[in-house]
Amino acid sequence: MKSRIFGIKYCGGCNPGYDRLELIDSIKTGLGEQIQWTSFEDSRADKVLIICGCSTQCAEVEHIPQEKRVWIHTPDFDRSSLKE
Image 1 (cartoon, rainbow, N blue to C red):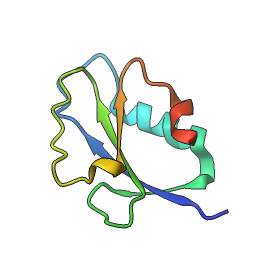
Image 2: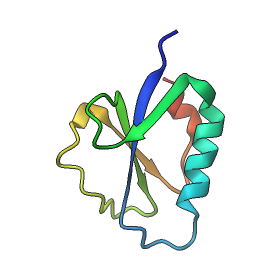
Image 3: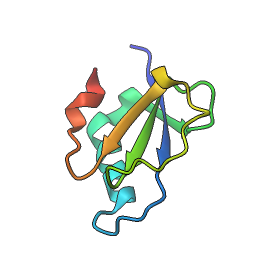
Image 4: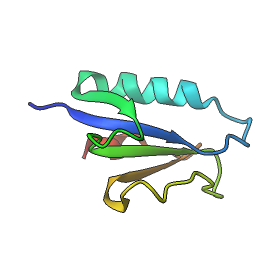
């Protein structure tokens, strides 16, 4: 099976109530080797995970095609949604 390529984009980081690096480590561990990780700016990315610590969604995403965007809101994030 061909691995998928995911990029990561973070919001402004105003919510100190969660550790966004810990969240990403958890996602990476859960998805295992089926995903290759890259920068959100990499045009090869199949999807870009946009990590948001609150509902403001302040991450600048205008340059990311809408069909590649996967919004992740903490703390209500369900990792199973990424396996689709």
